[in-house]
Image 1 (cartoon, rainbow, N blue to C red):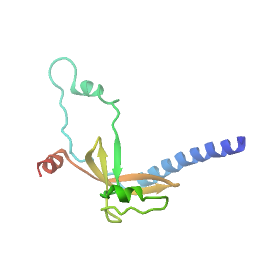
Image 2 (image 1 turned 90 degrees about the vertical axis):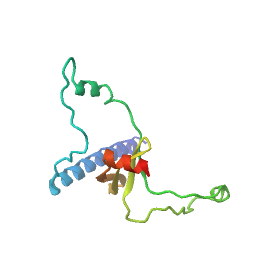
Image 3 (image 1 turned 135 degrees about the horizontal axis):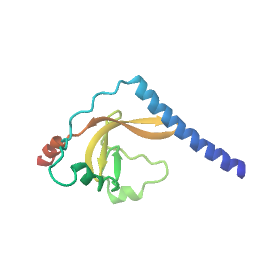
Image 4 (image 1 turned 90 degrees about the horizontal axis):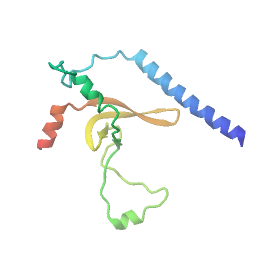
Length: 138
């Protein structure tokens, strides 16, 4: 049993090393684009404290990130008939960008990446605040 625990902890460390190597390889192979001016830059207000000091208060608030592959609607009858190995058809096409939601709000789209049998997502498009407002107006 102890050999099994040692192997699983070694496999966990290898997985972390693989992710770090993949991220380093990406950084070397892809030139980092200049960050887009998506968000407003805060200037120092006059008086006590700065806007950044005020933002520090919210930096540790946890948020829920969801990556959505697709959606579908089925009847309860069909839901109850699902079994191991059942396939549920989604509305998304293969190869389409995945939606990245933070607390239920679409903030980005990306593509699935796999490193050492673990899934991740590479962000390909960030939704600007103005684009989010336009989508709300529809």
